Each structure stands twice: as structure tokens, then as C-alpha cells.
Image 1 (cartoon, rainbow, N blue to C red):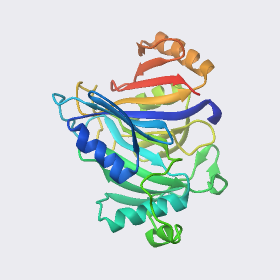
Image 2: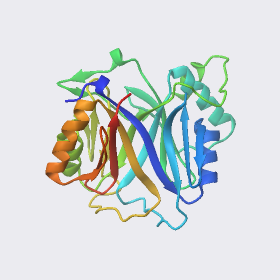
Image 3: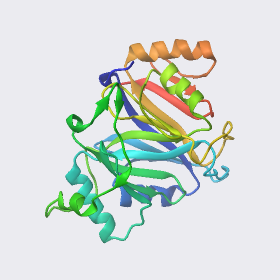
Length: 280
């Protein structure tokens, strides 16, 4: 088991064909600030922290929505009022969304970037309102009360960025749940916090989920064929002792891709690189 202070999500890296177009979307729509641009790679984030890395590869194969990879990257707003301000901005500018849900532990809006990568923008409900039963957190998918959410912002307006935004969780498409659980729970040491039909949710102790895996669109998917567009790396920031322990276990299982010092690069069962780095 990993405690919450030993673990949090880092950046998500995506391979894209059109770096300018996709980057503009994350700045204009999601509210990330561009942090750097060097050649074919650009980084975006909030408060100086990198949350997203875009890597341009115009020759990369276009990923199928039915293969393993990214379901969505979930950007966590600092407060419900921040999410309300952003939701009003989205509505006023007629920016298309693909869903809006109340999950009991959180409220979420879903979008798709210009190259088909899923995005969630959400705010947590207070942790003391989450309902736990024998280590499993109660989560639902119900209609979101959009007028009440927008009303939480009062008369304030979205300014383009939320400085306290973080990468709250990453939801993955996988070919099957048992090998996903063996990797994310068994190897990395995350707790399983709940099961949905066709999905498993995992967390460092105390959060509803940092990682989710589902087979809704990707049941039976094989190892990914790189280079392709879509997810190219998931980064997790972990305490040094945990990095060392995971490295030893990964070496024993033959799933370590490399890494130096307090960094280890793994391949999940579908070949997606997962990097574990020293938490700051």
C-alpha cells in the first residue's frame, strides 16, 4: 500500500500530428499555460508544474479508439467555484463537450481534443463526504446539476487559467482487467478502491482514484504498436523508497524499461511506458 504523501500523478505525454493545433486547444479550452517549447516537444501546466507534454510525430500511426491507451486525462480544479467558472466559459463559447457527470466523489465535464484524446475537467467534493465501505469508495455516474455548478461561481468569471490545477487522475483503456490489476495493484502497489462493470479504479491510500483501467471499448486489445498517436507516457511521482522497491520487483518480472537513480521506467501489459520518478 502506498500512502497519499508518497504518491501523486505527474505529467501525461501525448504523441500528436499537429502540435500547434492541439497545444492551442489545451491552452484556450482547458486553461493550461504553455511552459516550454523545444523543437517537436511542448509542455503545458499550471502554477509552473508540467501536467501535459505534447510530442509531434507527423509519421506516427493514427491510434484506433478501440486499442489500449488513453481513455482520458483528468485535470483537477482547485475548487468547485473554479469548475463553475470554467463551465460557464465553456457554455458561453459553445465549446463542444461529450459528457457531464456527477460521480458522488466529484463533478466532471468531458471533452475530446482535436486528435481524439479524452479529457476530463473536474472538481472533488469534500473528502469527508465520500462514502467508504470496507475499503471501497462509493462512486456513481449520474446527471450533473449544471445550473447549480455554474451558480457556485457567483458573479466571478474564468480568467483563462486555474493556478492550482493538477493532474488528478489518468483513466486508461486496457485489453483485460486481471493483468491491469496485477500491474497497477500488484506491482506498483496502488489500492483497488472500487470496481465498475468492466473497470477497476486504483489509488494511493485516501483518494478515490489516481488510475483507472477499463475495457469498455478495448476488450481483448493487444500490445500497442508504436509509434502511434495518443498516449506515449504516464508519469507518477513516488517516494524514493517506493521507487527502489518497484524497480526491484519490475526487474524480477522483466517489465522494467530502464531509468536511472530514483527513476524507473516500466511498460504496462499493453506496452504503454509508465515512469515513476522521485516525488518532490
